[in-house]
Length: 584
Image (cartoon, rainbow, N blue to C red; front, side, top):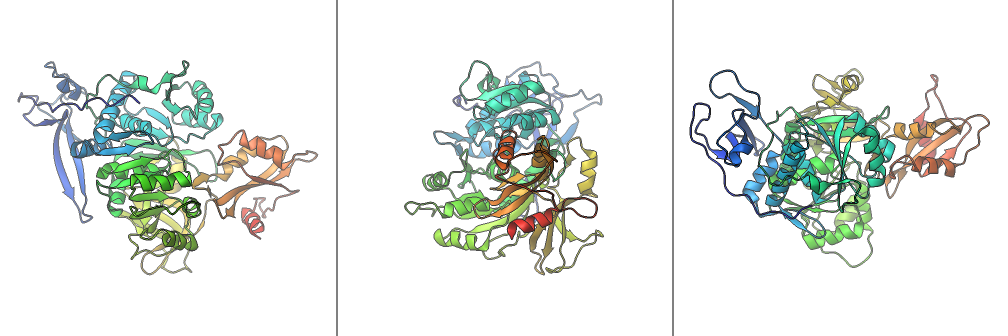
Protein backbone atom coordinates (compact mmCIF):
# COMPACT_ATOMS: atom_id res chain seq x y z
CA UNK A 1 0.00 0.00 0.00
CA UNK A 2 1.51 3.39 -0.95
CA UNK A 3 2.14 5.89 1.86
CA UNK A 4 -0.81 8.24 2.49
CA UNK A 5 -0.55 11.56 0.73
CA UNK A 6 -1.47 14.88 2.31
CA UNK A 7 -5.20 15.44 2.73
CA UNK A 8 -6.94 17.19 -0.12
CA UNK A 9 -7.96 20.79 0.29
CA UNK A 10 -11.36 22.33 0.50
CA UNK A 11 -14.45 21.98 -1.63
CA UNK A 12 -15.49 23.48 -4.92
CA UNK A 13 -18.31 25.90 -5.56
CA UNK A 14 -19.91 27.13 -8.74
CA UNK A 15 -21.89 30.15 -9.80
CA UNK A 16 -25.50 29.76 -10.86
CA UNK A 17 -26.24 29.09 -14.52
CA UNK A 18 -29.44 27.81 -16.17
CA UNK A 19 -28.11 24.25 -16.07
CA UNK A 20 -26.18 24.57 -12.82
CA UNK A 21 -28.15 25.89 -9.79
CA UNK A 22 -26.34 27.85 -7.12
CA UNK A 23 -26.23 24.99 -4.61
CA UNK A 24 -23.25 24.14 -2.43
CA UNK A 25 -20.91 21.50 -3.77
CA UNK A 26 -19.32 19.60 -0.93
CA UNK A 27 -16.28 17.53 -1.86
CA UNK A 28 -17.38 17.30 -5.45
CA UNK A 29 -20.96 16.15 -4.77
CA UNK A 30 -23.85 18.33 -5.87
CA UNK A 31 -26.28 17.32 -3.18
CA UNK A 32 -29.21 18.11 -1.01
CA UNK A 33 -29.21 16.27 2.31
CA UNK A 34 -32.28 15.15 4.20
CA UNK A 35 -31.99 13.38 7.52
CA UNK A 36 -34.78 11.04 8.56
CA UNK A 37 -34.98 10.07 12.22
CA UNK A 38 -37.13 7.12 13.23
CA UNK A 39 -38.14 5.62 16.55
CA UNK A 40 -34.92 3.60 16.51
CA UNK A 41 -33.02 6.80 17.29
CA UNK A 42 -30.51 6.60 14.47
CA UNK A 43 -30.47 8.80 11.39
CA UNK A 44 -30.48 7.61 7.83
CA UNK A 45 -28.77 10.03 5.49
CA UNK A 46 -29.79 9.86 1.88
CA UNK A 47 -28.24 11.95 -0.82
CA UNK A 48 -29.80 13.53 -3.91
CA UNK A 49 -27.33 13.83 -6.78
CA UNK A 50 -27.67 15.79 -9.99
CA UNK A 51 -26.91 14.21 -13.33
CA UNK A 52 -25.99 17.60 -14.76
CA UNK A 53 -22.21 17.66 -14.46
CA UNK A 54 -18.98 15.85 -13.71
CA UNK A 55 -17.78 15.99 -10.13
CA UNK A 56 -14.23 15.12 -11.15
CA UNK A 57 -14.12 18.13 -13.50
CA UNK A 58 -15.35 20.41 -10.72
CA UNK A 59 -12.69 19.14 -8.36
CA UNK A 60 -10.04 19.83 -10.98
CA UNK A 61 -11.35 23.37 -11.43
CA UNK A 62 -12.27 22.91 -15.07
CA UNK A 63 -14.58 25.37 -16.78
CA UNK A 64 -15.65 23.01 -19.58
CA UNK A 65 -17.93 20.96 -17.31
CA UNK A 66 -19.36 18.03 -19.21
CA UNK A 67 -22.11 15.63 -18.24
CA UNK A 68 -20.84 12.36 -16.79
CA UNK A 69 -24.25 10.70 -16.89
CA UNK A 70 -26.89 10.39 -19.57
CA UNK A 71 -28.04 13.74 -20.95
CA UNK A 72 -31.52 14.80 -19.86
CA UNK A 73 -33.55 16.07 -22.79
CA UNK A 74 -36.13 17.89 -20.66
CA UNK A 75 -35.31 21.50 -19.74
CA UNK A 76 -33.82 22.31 -16.33
CA UNK A 77 -32.03 20.06 -13.89
CA UNK A 78 -33.43 16.65 -13.05
CA UNK A 79 -32.68 14.91 -9.78
CA UNK A 80 -32.72 11.23 -8.93
CA UNK A 81 -32.41 9.53 -5.56
CA UNK A 82 -29.12 7.64 -5.23
CA UNK A 83 -27.22 5.94 -2.46
CA UNK A 84 -23.78 4.36 -2.43
CA UNK A 85 -22.62 2.41 0.62
CA UNK A 86 -19.22 4.10 0.36
CA UNK A 87 -20.99 7.20 1.69
CA UNK A 88 -20.51 5.83 5.22
CA UNK A 89 -16.74 6.11 4.77
CA UNK A 90 -16.95 9.59 3.27
CA UNK A 91 -19.20 10.86 6.08
CA UNK A 92 -16.93 9.43 8.79
CA UNK A 93 -13.95 10.95 7.03
CA UNK A 94 -15.74 14.33 7.08
CA UNK A 95 -16.43 13.98 10.80
CA UNK A 96 -13.30 12.18 12.03
CA UNK A 97 -10.59 12.73 9.38
CA UNK A 98 -7.50 12.36 11.63
CA UNK A 99 -8.99 9.60 13.80
CA UNK A 100 -7.62 6.05 13.34
CA UNK A 101 -9.72 3.87 11.03
CA UNK A 102 -7.65 0.68 11.24
CA UNK A 103 -4.53 -0.68 12.89
CA UNK A 104 -2.32 -3.43 11.50
CA UNK A 105 0.66 -4.96 13.27
CA UNK A 106 2.93 -2.22 11.93
CA UNK A 107 0.79 0.67 10.68
CA UNK A 108 -2.19 2.84 11.56
CA UNK A 109 -4.40 4.41 8.90
CA UNK A 110 -6.71 7.34 9.59
CA UNK A 111 -10.14 7.88 8.08
CA UNK A 112 -8.56 10.50 5.83
CA UNK A 113 -5.95 7.96 4.67
CA UNK A 114 -8.48 5.22 3.86
CA UNK A 115 -10.87 7.61 2.14
CA UNK A 116 -8.08 9.05 0.00
CA UNK A 117 -6.51 5.71 -0.89
CA UNK A 118 -9.85 4.13 -1.75
CA UNK A 119 -10.65 7.17 -3.89
CA UNK A 120 -7.38 6.79 -5.80
CA UNK A 121 -8.17 3.11 -6.28
CA UNK A 122 -11.69 3.90 -7.51
CA UNK A 123 -10.28 6.24 -10.13
CA UNK A 124 -7.65 3.67 -11.06
CA UNK A 125 -10.31 0.99 -11.54
CA UNK A 126 -12.21 3.35 -13.83
CA UNK A 127 -9.03 4.04 -15.79
CA UNK A 128 -8.55 0.28 -16.03
CA UNK A 129 -11.79 0.19 -18.00
CA UNK A 130 -14.15 -1.19 -15.39
CA UNK A 131 -17.74 -0.01 -15.62
CA UNK A 132 -20.41 0.30 -12.88
CA UNK A 133 -21.83 -3.14 -12.17
CA UNK A 134 -18.66 -5.03 -13.07
CA UNK A 135 -17.46 -7.58 -10.52
CA UNK A 136 -14.20 -7.27 -8.59
CA UNK A 137 -13.15 -10.32 -6.57
CA UNK A 138 -11.23 -9.72 -3.33
CA UNK A 139 -9.31 -12.73 -2.06
CA UNK A 140 -7.50 -11.17 0.88
CA UNK A 141 -7.05 -11.79 4.59
CA UNK A 142 -7.83 -9.08 7.14
CA UNK A 143 -5.49 -6.30 6.05
CA UNK A 144 -5.71 -2.61 5.25
CA UNK A 145 -5.66 -3.35 1.52
CA UNK A 146 -8.92 -5.27 1.86
CA UNK A 147 -10.63 -2.17 3.27
CA UNK A 148 -9.13 0.11 0.61
CA UNK A 149 -10.11 -2.27 -2.21
CA UNK A 150 -13.60 -2.80 -0.77
CA UNK A 151 -14.49 0.89 -0.55
CA UNK A 152 -12.58 1.73 -3.71
CA UNK A 153 -14.65 -0.74 -5.72
CA UNK A 154 -17.87 0.56 -4.14
CA UNK A 155 -16.93 4.16 -4.94
CA UNK A 156 -16.48 3.13 -8.57
CA UNK A 157 -19.96 1.58 -8.61
CA UNK A 158 -18.53 -1.94 -8.90
CA UNK A 159 -19.80 -5.11 -7.22
CA UNK A 160 -17.46 -6.56 -4.60
CA UNK A 161 -17.10 -10.36 -4.48
CA UNK A 162 -15.26 -11.33 -1.25
CA UNK A 163 -13.61 -14.76 -1.46
CA UNK A 164 -11.84 -17.00 1.01
CA UNK A 165 -8.01 -16.88 0.64
CA UNK A 166 -7.95 -20.65 1.31
CA UNK A 167 -9.89 -21.64 -1.83
CA UNK A 168 -8.17 -24.12 -4.09
CA UNK A 169 -7.69 -23.52 -7.81
CA UNK A 170 -10.80 -25.35 -8.99
CA UNK A 171 -12.98 -23.72 -6.34
CA UNK A 172 -11.70 -20.24 -7.13
CA UNK A 173 -12.08 -20.73 -10.87
CA UNK A 174 -15.71 -21.71 -10.34
CA UNK A 175 -16.40 -18.51 -8.36
CA UNK A 176 -14.64 -16.25 -10.86
CA UNK A 177 -16.55 -17.74 -13.79
CA UNK A 178 -19.88 -17.84 -11.98
CA UNK A 179 -19.85 -14.14 -11.04
CA UNK A 180 -18.27 -13.01 -14.36
CA UNK A 181 -15.44 -11.32 -12.47
CA UNK A 182 -13.38 -8.78 -14.38
CA UNK A 183 -10.55 -8.51 -11.90
CA UNK A 184 -9.08 -10.47 -8.96
CA UNK A 185 -7.10 -8.88 -6.13
CA UNK A 186 -5.19 -11.46 -4.10
CA UNK A 187 -2.09 -11.80 -1.94
CA UNK A 188 1.02 -13.97 -1.77
CA UNK A 189 -0.61 -16.52 0.54
CA UNK A 190 -3.17 -17.38 -2.18
CA UNK A 191 -1.09 -16.82 -5.30
CA UNK A 192 -0.20 -20.46 -6.06
CA UNK A 193 -3.88 -21.36 -6.28
CA UNK A 194 -5.14 -18.00 -7.58
CA UNK A 195 -2.80 -17.57 -10.55
CA UNK A 196 -3.95 -20.64 -12.52
CA UNK A 197 -7.59 -19.93 -11.61
CA UNK A 198 -7.37 -16.36 -12.90
CA UNK A 199 -5.60 -17.48 -16.07
CA UNK A 200 -8.21 -20.16 -16.78
CA UNK A 201 -11.00 -17.65 -16.19
CA UNK A 202 -9.38 -14.86 -18.24
CA UNK A 203 -9.49 -12.57 -15.21
CA UNK A 204 -6.86 -9.89 -14.59
CA UNK A 205 -4.92 -10.63 -11.38
CA UNK A 206 -3.40 -7.97 -9.13
CA UNK A 207 -1.08 -8.95 -6.30
CA UNK A 208 -0.91 -7.24 -2.91
CA UNK A 209 2.61 -7.17 -1.52
CA UNK A 210 6.02 -7.30 -3.08
CA UNK A 211 5.96 -7.51 -6.89
CA UNK A 212 7.27 -10.79 -8.27
CA UNK A 213 7.85 -9.65 -11.83
CA UNK A 214 5.11 -11.89 -13.22
CA UNK A 215 1.88 -10.49 -11.82
CA UNK A 216 0.68 -6.90 -11.78
CA UNK A 217 1.13 -5.19 -8.42
CA UNK A 218 -1.94 -3.97 -6.56
CA UNK A 219 -0.23 -0.60 -6.11
CA UNK A 220 -0.33 -0.20 -9.89
CA UNK A 221 -4.12 0.18 -9.73
CA UNK A 222 -3.90 3.47 -7.84
CA UNK A 223 -4.55 6.65 -9.79
CA UNK A 224 -2.16 9.51 -9.17
CA UNK A 225 -4.79 11.52 -7.31
CA UNK A 226 -8.18 11.06 -5.68
CA UNK A 227 -10.88 12.89 -7.62
CA UNK A 228 -13.27 12.48 -4.70
CA UNK A 229 -15.97 11.13 -6.99
CA UNK A 230 -18.39 8.47 -5.69
CA UNK A 231 -20.47 6.75 -8.36
CA UNK A 232 -24.19 7.54 -8.09
CA UNK A 233 -25.71 4.11 -7.55
CA UNK A 234 -29.29 3.21 -6.78
CA UNK A 235 -30.09 1.97 -3.26
CA UNK A 236 -31.33 -1.25 -4.92
CA UNK A 237 -28.12 -1.84 -6.89
CA UNK A 238 -26.04 -4.83 -5.85
CA UNK A 239 -23.04 -3.77 -3.77
CA UNK A 240 -21.71 -7.17 -2.66
CA UNK A 241 -22.04 -10.65 -4.10
CA UNK A 242 -21.50 -13.01 -1.18
CA UNK A 243 -21.18 -16.69 -1.98
CA UNK A 244 -23.07 -19.22 0.08
CA UNK A 245 -24.47 -22.68 -0.49
CA UNK A 246 -27.08 -25.08 0.73
CA UNK A 247 -26.66 -28.82 0.89
CA UNK A 248 -27.16 -29.31 -2.84
CA UNK A 249 -25.44 -27.87 -5.86
CA UNK A 250 -22.62 -25.39 -6.18
CA UNK A 251 -22.14 -22.21 -4.10
CA UNK A 252 -24.53 -19.38 -5.00
CA UNK A 253 -23.92 -15.64 -4.90
CA UNK A 254 -26.34 -13.76 -2.61
CA UNK A 255 -26.91 -10.27 -3.99
CA UNK A 256 -26.78 -7.67 -1.21
CA UNK A 257 -27.68 -4.09 -2.06
CA UNK A 258 -26.19 -0.79 -0.97
CA UNK A 259 -29.26 -0.01 1.11
CA UNK A 260 -29.49 -3.44 2.75
CA UNK A 261 -25.87 -3.32 3.89
CA UNK A 262 -26.29 0.27 5.07
CA UNK A 263 -29.36 -0.58 7.11
CA UNK A 264 -27.79 -3.68 8.63
CA UNK A 265 -24.64 -1.92 9.79
CA UNK A 266 -26.68 1.04 11.05
CA UNK A 267 -29.02 -1.14 13.10
CA UNK A 268 -26.35 -3.46 14.50
CA UNK A 269 -23.95 -0.63 15.36
CA UNK A 270 -26.84 0.98 17.23
CA UNK A 271 -27.50 -2.29 19.07
CA UNK A 272 -23.81 -2.51 20.00
CA UNK A 273 -23.88 1.17 21.05
CA UNK A 274 -20.80 1.76 18.91
CA UNK A 275 -19.21 5.16 19.19
CA UNK A 276 -16.20 6.90 17.71
CA UNK A 277 -14.01 5.99 20.69
CA UNK A 278 -14.53 2.22 20.23
CA UNK A 279 -11.89 -0.14 18.88
CA UNK A 280 -13.24 -3.40 17.45
CA UNK A 281 -11.00 -6.43 17.12
CA UNK A 282 -11.42 -7.68 13.55
CA UNK A 283 -10.26 -11.29 13.54
CA UNK A 284 -13.43 -12.70 11.98
CA UNK A 285 -12.70 -12.85 8.24
CA UNK A 286 -13.79 -9.73 6.38
CA UNK A 287 -14.75 -11.96 3.44
CA UNK A 288 -17.47 -13.43 5.70
CA UNK A 289 -20.81 -11.63 6.09
CA UNK A 290 -20.39 -11.26 9.87
CA UNK A 291 -16.96 -9.66 9.58
CA UNK A 292 -17.88 -7.55 6.55
CA UNK A 293 -21.34 -6.24 7.38
CA UNK A 294 -21.38 -6.15 11.18
CA UNK A 295 -17.74 -5.46 12.04
CA UNK A 296 -16.22 -3.48 9.14
CA UNK A 297 -19.31 -1.59 7.96
CA UNK A 298 -20.55 -1.11 11.52
CA UNK A 299 -17.27 0.40 12.68
CA UNK A 300 -17.05 2.75 9.70
CA UNK A 301 -20.70 3.75 10.13
CA UNK A 302 -19.93 5.11 13.61
CA UNK A 303 -16.37 6.33 13.04
CA UNK A 304 -14.84 3.63 15.25
CA UNK A 305 -11.52 1.91 14.59
CA UNK A 306 -10.54 -1.67 13.77
CA UNK A 307 -7.60 -3.69 15.04
CA UNK A 308 -6.93 -6.09 12.15
CA UNK A 309 -5.64 -9.63 12.62
CA UNK A 310 -5.16 -11.75 9.47
CA UNK A 311 -5.78 -15.04 11.28
CA UNK A 312 -6.99 -16.32 14.62
CA UNK A 313 -4.25 -17.02 17.11
CA UNK A 314 -5.51 -17.08 20.72
CA UNK A 315 -2.40 -15.56 22.28
CA UNK A 316 -2.22 -12.86 19.59
CA UNK A 317 -5.90 -12.02 20.08
CA UNK A 318 -5.44 -11.51 23.82
CA UNK A 319 -2.28 -9.49 23.21
CA UNK A 320 -4.05 -7.24 20.72
CA UNK A 321 -7.04 -6.67 23.00
CA UNK A 322 -4.63 -5.71 25.78
CA UNK A 323 -2.29 -3.46 23.78
CA UNK A 324 -4.89 -1.81 21.54
CA UNK A 325 -7.41 -1.53 24.39
CA UNK A 326 -10.12 -3.09 22.25
CA UNK A 327 -13.65 -2.50 23.48
CA UNK A 328 -15.61 -4.91 21.25
CA UNK A 329 -14.78 -8.47 20.21
CA UNK A 330 -16.87 -10.60 17.85
CA UNK A 331 -16.16 -14.29 17.43
CA UNK A 332 -17.54 -17.78 17.14
CA UNK A 333 -17.82 -20.32 19.99
CA UNK A 334 -14.60 -22.12 19.06
CA UNK A 335 -12.71 -18.85 19.44
CA UNK A 336 -14.09 -18.28 22.93
CA UNK A 337 -13.13 -21.82 23.89
CA UNK A 338 -9.58 -21.33 22.64
CA UNK A 339 -9.21 -17.97 24.42
CA UNK A 340 -10.44 -19.51 27.65
CA UNK A 341 -7.64 -22.07 27.67
CA UNK A 342 -4.65 -19.92 26.74
CA UNK A 343 -1.77 -20.56 29.11
CA UNK A 344 0.35 -17.79 30.51
CA UNK A 345 -0.02 -14.73 32.73
CA UNK A 346 -3.42 -13.20 33.36
CA UNK A 347 -4.32 -10.68 30.67
CA UNK A 348 -5.84 -7.28 31.28
CA UNK A 349 -9.05 -7.28 29.23
CA UNK A 350 -10.63 -4.51 31.25
CA UNK A 351 -11.15 -2.43 28.12
CA UNK A 352 -13.64 -4.96 26.69
CA UNK A 353 -17.23 -3.89 27.21
CA UNK A 354 -18.94 -6.26 24.76
CA UNK A 355 -18.36 -9.64 23.15
CA UNK A 356 -20.60 -10.96 20.38
CA UNK A 357 -20.98 -14.61 19.41
CA UNK A 358 -22.55 -16.07 16.30
CA UNK A 359 -22.33 -18.83 13.65
CA UNK A 360 -23.34 -21.61 16.05
CA UNK A 361 -24.76 -22.04 19.55
CA UNK A 362 -22.51 -21.02 22.42
CA UNK A 363 -22.56 -23.70 25.15
CA UNK A 364 -23.83 -22.41 28.49
CA UNK A 365 -20.79 -23.76 30.35
CA UNK A 366 -18.41 -21.96 28.01
CA UNK A 367 -20.28 -18.66 28.31
CA UNK A 368 -20.23 -18.73 32.12
CA UNK A 369 -16.59 -19.87 32.27
CA UNK A 370 -15.45 -17.09 29.91
CA UNK A 371 -17.33 -14.37 31.76
CA UNK A 372 -16.01 -15.70 35.09
CA UNK A 373 -12.40 -15.68 33.89
CA UNK A 374 -12.70 -12.19 32.40
CA UNK A 375 -14.87 -10.18 34.83
CA UNK A 376 -16.90 -7.38 33.30
CA UNK A 377 -17.06 -9.02 29.86
CA UNK A 378 -20.56 -9.77 28.54
CA UNK A 379 -21.17 -12.18 25.66
CA UNK A 380 -24.32 -11.60 23.62
CA UNK A 381 -25.53 -14.05 20.97
CA UNK A 382 -27.23 -13.34 17.67
CA UNK A 383 -28.27 -15.01 14.44
CA UNK A 384 -27.93 -14.19 10.78
CA UNK A 385 -27.17 -15.51 7.33
CA UNK A 386 -25.36 -14.40 4.22
CA UNK A 387 -28.81 -13.98 2.67
CA UNK A 388 -29.79 -11.48 5.38
CA UNK A 389 -26.68 -9.27 5.15
CA UNK A 390 -25.59 -10.65 8.54
CA UNK A 391 -27.68 -9.86 11.63
CA UNK A 392 -31.32 -10.94 11.90
CA UNK A 393 -31.86 -11.44 15.64
CA UNK A 394 -29.87 -10.41 18.70
CA UNK A 395 -29.87 -10.49 22.49
CA UNK A 396 -29.99 -6.84 23.50
CA UNK A 397 -28.09 -6.80 26.82
CA UNK A 398 -26.82 -8.88 29.73
CA UNK A 399 -30.00 -8.05 31.61
CA UNK A 400 -32.31 -8.98 28.73
CA UNK A 401 -30.47 -11.94 27.24
CA UNK A 402 -31.63 -15.55 27.46
CA UNK A 403 -28.96 -18.22 27.43
CA UNK A 404 -29.12 -20.51 24.36
CA UNK A 405 -31.48 -18.09 22.63
CA UNK A 406 -30.58 -16.22 19.46
CA UNK A 407 -32.56 -13.25 20.77
CA UNK A 408 -35.32 -11.23 19.16
CA UNK A 409 -35.55 -9.65 15.69
CA UNK A 410 -33.48 -6.54 15.04
CA UNK A 411 -35.18 -3.25 14.14
CA UNK A 412 -37.10 -3.33 10.86
CA UNK A 413 -37.00 -7.12 10.50
CA UNK A 414 -39.93 -9.52 10.92
CA UNK A 415 -39.21 -13.12 11.91
CA UNK A 416 -41.81 -15.87 12.09
CA UNK A 417 -41.78 -19.59 12.83
CA UNK A 418 -44.02 -21.47 10.40
CA UNK A 419 -45.29 -25.00 10.05
CA UNK A 420 -45.39 -27.22 6.98
CA UNK A 421 -48.60 -25.49 5.85
CA UNK A 422 -46.95 -22.05 5.95
CA UNK A 423 -49.01 -20.87 8.92
CA UNK A 424 -47.36 -19.17 11.87
CA UNK A 425 -46.96 -21.48 14.85
CA UNK A 426 -47.86 -20.69 18.46
CA UNK A 427 -45.11 -20.08 20.99
CA UNK A 428 -43.56 -22.87 23.01
CA UNK A 429 -40.96 -25.63 22.58
CA UNK A 430 -43.65 -28.04 21.35
CA UNK A 431 -44.17 -25.89 18.26
CA UNK A 432 -40.97 -26.20 16.25
CA UNK A 433 -41.03 -24.85 12.70
CA UNK A 434 -38.93 -23.13 10.07
CA UNK A 435 -37.61 -19.61 10.58
CA UNK A 436 -38.71 -17.20 7.84
CA UNK A 437 -37.46 -13.61 7.61
CA UNK A 438 -38.77 -10.45 5.98
CA UNK A 439 -37.25 -6.99 6.11
CA UNK A 440 -34.68 -4.53 4.85
CA UNK A 441 -31.88 -7.09 5.26
CA UNK A 442 -33.18 -9.82 2.91
CA UNK A 443 -31.13 -10.32 -0.26
CA UNK A 444 -32.34 -9.50 -3.76
CA UNK A 445 -31.79 -13.11 -4.74
CA UNK A 446 -29.11 -15.51 -5.92
CA UNK A 447 -27.08 -14.14 -8.82
CA UNK A 448 -28.33 -15.53 -12.15
CA UNK A 449 -30.29 -18.29 -10.38
CA UNK A 450 -34.01 -17.46 -10.57
CA UNK A 451 -35.08 -21.02 -9.83
CA UNK A 452 -32.90 -21.25 -6.71
CA UNK A 453 -34.13 -17.82 -5.63
CA UNK A 454 -37.76 -18.86 -6.02
CA UNK A 455 -37.18 -21.81 -3.69
CA UNK A 456 -36.26 -19.56 -0.77
CA UNK A 457 -37.97 -16.23 -1.51
CA UNK A 458 -41.72 -15.74 -1.73
CA UNK A 459 -43.68 -12.51 -1.15
CA UNK A 460 -40.63 -10.98 0.49
CA UNK A 461 -40.19 -13.84 2.97
CA UNK A 462 -36.88 -15.74 3.09
CA UNK A 463 -37.01 -19.40 4.06
CA UNK A 464 -33.89 -20.05 6.12
CA UNK A 465 -34.09 -23.83 6.47
CA UNK A 466 -33.38 -23.45 10.20
CA UNK A 467 -35.78 -24.97 12.70
CA UNK A 468 -36.71 -23.13 15.88
CA UNK A 469 -39.41 -22.22 18.35
CA UNK A 470 -40.36 -18.92 19.95
CA UNK A 471 -41.05 -18.52 23.66
CA UNK A 472 -43.81 -16.39 25.16
CA UNK A 473 -41.46 -13.38 25.38
CA UNK A 474 -40.66 -13.53 21.66
CA UNK A 475 -37.16 -15.00 22.04
CA UNK A 476 -36.13 -17.54 19.39
CA UNK A 477 -34.38 -20.82 20.08
CA UNK A 478 -32.82 -22.85 17.23
CA UNK A 479 -33.21 -26.60 17.77
CA UNK A 480 -31.84 -28.03 14.53
CA UNK A 481 -30.86 -27.23 10.97
CA UNK A 482 -33.07 -28.37 8.18
CA UNK A 483 -30.02 -27.92 6.02
CA UNK A 484 -27.11 -30.28 6.58
CA UNK A 485 -24.65 -27.42 6.92
CA UNK A 486 -21.56 -28.20 9.00
CA UNK A 487 -19.95 -25.34 10.94
CA UNK A 488 -16.34 -26.24 11.62
CA UNK A 489 -14.46 -23.68 13.70
CA UNK A 490 -16.80 -20.94 12.48
CA UNK A 491 -16.41 -21.85 8.80
CA UNK A 492 -19.33 -23.18 6.79
CA UNK A 493 -18.72 -26.57 5.20
CA UNK A 494 -21.32 -27.78 2.75
CA UNK A 495 -21.55 -31.58 2.66
CA UNK A 496 -22.66 -31.76 -0.95
CA UNK A 497 -19.49 -29.99 -2.10
CA UNK A 498 -17.28 -32.47 -0.23
CA UNK A 499 -19.36 -35.38 -1.48
CA UNK A 500 -18.93 -34.24 -5.07
CA UNK A 501 -15.15 -34.36 -4.63
CA UNK A 502 -15.32 -37.86 -3.15
CA UNK A 503 -17.57 -39.05 -5.97
CA UNK A 504 -14.77 -38.03 -8.31
CA UNK A 505 -12.54 -40.77 -6.91
CA UNK A 506 -12.69 -43.90 -9.09
CA UNK A 507 -13.14 -46.26 -6.12
CA UNK A 508 -16.12 -44.48 -4.49
CA UNK A 509 -19.64 -45.77 -5.09
CA UNK A 510 -21.58 -43.92 -2.41
CA UNK A 511 -20.71 -41.38 0.23
CA UNK A 512 -22.31 -39.19 2.86
CA UNK A 513 -20.63 -36.30 4.64
CA UNK A 514 -21.92 -35.22 8.04
CA UNK A 515 -20.81 -33.20 11.03
CA UNK A 516 -19.83 -34.85 14.28
CA UNK A 517 -19.89 -32.82 17.51
CA UNK A 518 -16.39 -31.67 18.42
CA UNK A 519 -15.43 -29.99 21.69
CA UNK A 520 -12.80 -27.74 20.14
CA UNK A 521 -14.23 -26.91 16.70
CA UNK A 522 -17.95 -27.25 17.29
CA UNK A 523 -18.25 -29.83 14.52
CA UNK A 524 -15.79 -32.03 12.62
CA UNK A 525 -16.24 -33.17 9.02
CA UNK A 526 -16.72 -36.94 8.73
CA UNK A 527 -17.24 -38.91 5.53
CA UNK A 528 -18.78 -42.37 5.25
CA UNK A 529 -17.79 -44.16 2.03
CA UNK A 530 -18.99 -47.31 0.33
CA UNK A 531 -16.48 -48.51 -2.33
CA UNK A 532 -17.40 -49.82 -5.74
CA UNK A 533 -17.50 -53.63 -6.08
CA UNK A 534 -13.98 -55.01 -6.36
CA UNK A 535 -12.38 -51.64 -5.55
CA UNK A 536 -9.93 -51.21 -2.71
CA UNK A 537 -9.26 -47.86 -1.07
CA UNK A 538 -8.01 -46.71 2.33
CA UNK A 539 -9.24 -43.80 4.48
CA UNK A 540 -5.81 -42.12 4.32
CA UNK A 541 -5.84 -42.27 0.53
CA UNK A 542 -9.28 -40.61 0.38
CA UNK A 543 -8.32 -37.95 2.92
CA UNK A 544 -5.26 -37.04 0.85
CA UNK A 545 -7.42 -36.97 -2.29
CA UNK A 546 -9.81 -34.48 -0.65
CA UNK A 547 -7.02 -32.40 0.87
CA UNK A 548 -5.60 -31.71 -2.60
CA UNK A 549 -8.97 -30.48 -3.89
CA UNK A 550 -10.60 -28.65 -1.00
CA UNK A 551 -9.76 -25.74 1.27
CA UNK A 552 -8.09 -26.84 4.54
CA UNK A 553 -11.21 -26.33 6.65
CA UNK A 554 -13.39 -28.40 4.30
CA UNK A 555 -11.70 -31.75 3.81
CA UNK A 556 -12.79 -34.61 6.12
CA UNK A 557 -10.42 -35.48 8.95
CA UNK A 558 -11.97 -38.91 9.32
CA UNK A 559 -13.30 -41.29 6.68
CA UNK A 560 -14.98 -44.58 7.47
CA UNK A 561 -15.22 -47.36 4.91
CA UNK A 562 -18.48 -49.38 5.04
CA UNK A 563 -20.15 -51.98 2.83
CA UNK A 564 -23.39 -50.04 2.48
CA UNK A 565 -24.90 -46.78 3.70
CA UNK A 566 -28.31 -46.70 5.44
CA UNK A 567 -31.09 -45.75 3.05
CA UNK A 568 -34.82 -45.15 3.21
CA UNK A 569 -37.64 -46.56 1.09
CA UNK A 570 -36.80 -44.28 -1.82
CA UNK A 571 -33.08 -45.06 -1.69
CA UNK A 572 -32.20 -41.74 -0.10
CA UNK A 573 -29.21 -41.92 2.24
CA UNK A 574 -30.37 -41.42 5.84
CA UNK A 575 -27.88 -38.95 7.24
CA UNK A 576 -29.78 -38.70 10.50
CA UNK A 577 -28.99 -42.36 11.25
CA UNK A 578 -25.34 -41.77 10.38
CA UNK A 579 -25.14 -38.84 12.78
CA UNK A 580 -26.77 -40.84 15.54
CA UNK A 581 -24.30 -43.70 15.07
CA UNK A 582 -21.36 -41.27 15.26
CA UNK A 583 -22.63 -39.75 18.48
CA UNK A 584 -23.36 -43.13 20.09
